[in-house]
Image (cartoon, rainbow, N blue to C red):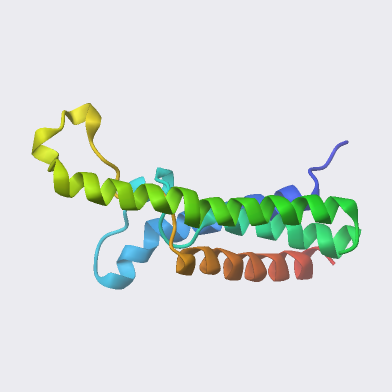
Length: 143
């Protein structure tokens, strides 16, 4: 195989676009870009959701929405979105409780608590919207 699968390329574009948005979005609130946001979990939008949803959409349009490959991609997307909100989102709640119980000055530097890990429903929905935009542009370019 001498080319990358279209679904992989679309997923990578969605992931990179989502992570880049996390870097530049503070500019719209009058703050400087924050480069470290590209490497942190959580935040707006959910890049993992955008990547898996974009992959599933490209597979659906390319292989058919009734194909087994699309079904697998759709299940993966559902698991990723659910995990982002319910599992990792719950960790955010626990972190906030811990921060109130044990303020940062009582923790060692290695034990710093992250600001975010999971996503809100709004951030996951934004990931789905980003996937739709990226997939539409991607398919228009490759058709």
